[in-house]
Image (cartoon, rainbow, N blue to C red; front, top):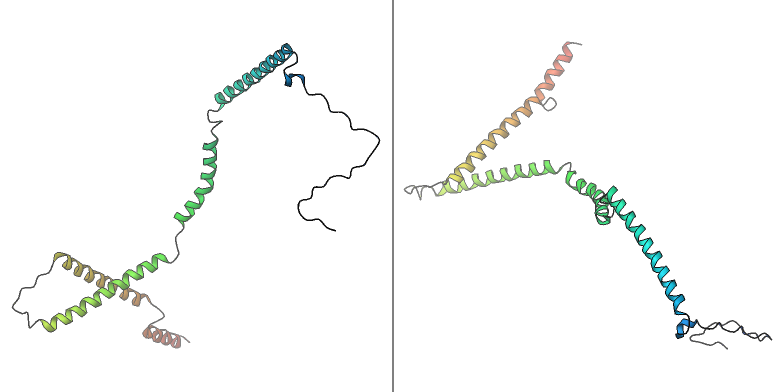
Length: 189
């Protein structure tokens, strides 16, 4: 039959003819009986050896501090070690740049400018339809709006020049250059 619950394992008790050895008597000083002078001398010698070891430790401590004042600066050393590990990670984050993000930002700005120009032209057409109604009224234009229009005109001029340069330097897209090349090739065969 099995027993359930907490079961303690005890070695099987064997009955032998030998009786168990008697326990040693408790120390005499526990009950107040004993030699007080021996105890005092032992305590004095223990304190003396303890003082000598403390003096040695103190001397070693002073010697170490003279050699290197930051020898016991454990927190500073630990922070420095962790800083060396963390610094490359932070530098990687700051130094790494995406390959394409700059061009994407430039293209987004270019599209925004083009959109603004188209919107301004659309507004200009709508205003031209209503110009006959407000012909006798004065028109006021702010300096900021004039500046914006001047920047748009400058940007358009730069874009036209850039486009003209690209067309001039393009060797593969021109039909005329192809014809010239073919004619040159046929003449020199």
